[in-house]
Image (tube, rainbow, N blue to C red; front, side, top):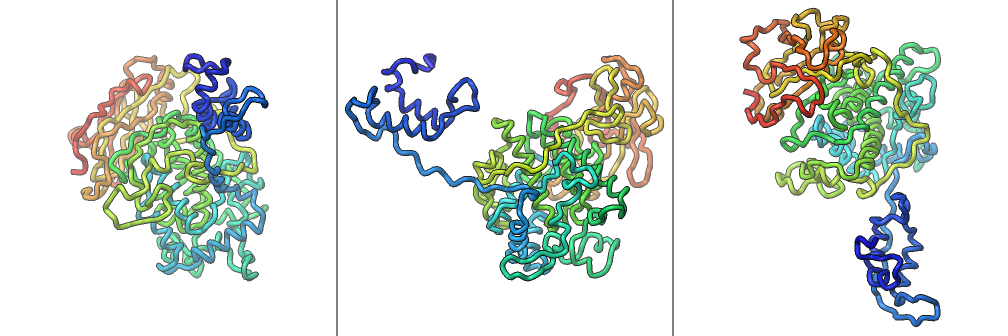
Length: 559
């Protein structure tokens, strides 16, 4: 410490700097040893404080020079409330949670006056996705519900190591979401289980709204019926469904490896993409930042789990009415917290308003005020959850930590996508096809990309096929600011095709592509696609940081 003018081996120096030493020890900015995880315990700090306030006595016979040199520390703040693993909760604790949903939120009531319907409509009308604010908007959404419920939301641990194995206690949905009834702890009544029989959006499940189902069950949220099967009943189909979960778990593990959180937030509150429905496994090319940062990668498994549960959870406008949403998203937030604590100095666009939540801990809502400064901000919630007043209890089951990649298994997550697979061991290095200046279009298109100088079959067994870039059009002129205002880059990984063609790093690959109208199948000529924004790709070998990307584009979109 001599470099900081403090000599801990000198009595006079310690006395002179004692208040500063105490403050650094109390704030844990100075570890006890070379191990940065070891700090002075509270009792030792209190002994040190009393020693200073009694006049720095060397021995017990020294006179006391009492003074309030270091004030008494404030009463320690209350401990954070704990979101617990559902698997760790006793039946009576789960029944208390169900009763709160019944009594306070009136989960089974489909009327517009139902607190549950009102809360779910906040998600329908305000949720933010596919941008930096995604995880933190949903963090505020759960915190607001906890304020209404007066209790923590337990989490469903879908990251359990054996969650993809049929027959495991961790596979499928937690049993409390499958039970037909429960006994209300206050009244002793046997009631329909609100975690299963929750009123669907406006009392009409998505399956019924699109004509795939009818009858009295339309009133309630619906999920994939395989979750309700047991034993030999649909065993093969159920095992296949459950096995899919490992893909999503691997995607979470991969997302947690990124050192940066997200690309900077664009126009406050407007996403750079909109994927209204989820069909697992979601194609990689819907997530252009999945190979760049945590947030860009994390949305893909988030969407996959939504679609995996099925029916109402698989549609963004219906999803929040299914109570599995809250315990599912509590685990989404738990894994977000893993990343935050591993990256305590991460950068975020702090000032983005997370409407309609107000206050630093999203305890209230205001859907009408135009004053952005009144709203909870991304910066308010982009911090250690303990600062926000809650923490997570440990999971009961061992956690999935990743699996070894399988040769030829597809993308980084192990998915198989059109034209995509992992580079082979003999790959010449990273290779990319880059579309720069991508902005909104009126119509929808597909762009199939090939190496080798000729556009052949858009099939995975064609070694020259890189993959497909889909451009989903707005359909109407954008008058609500929903689309990207500035051109942005999108990438396709061309490493597999480059290796399959035997190309060497730096070699000209003979890039070509084919643009088709998504709905009519019409193949566009160069004259037709030349003026469309971001439709002409370039090829790049190596690190994307040195790719030919123009990040200064200011051209308006959505003509």
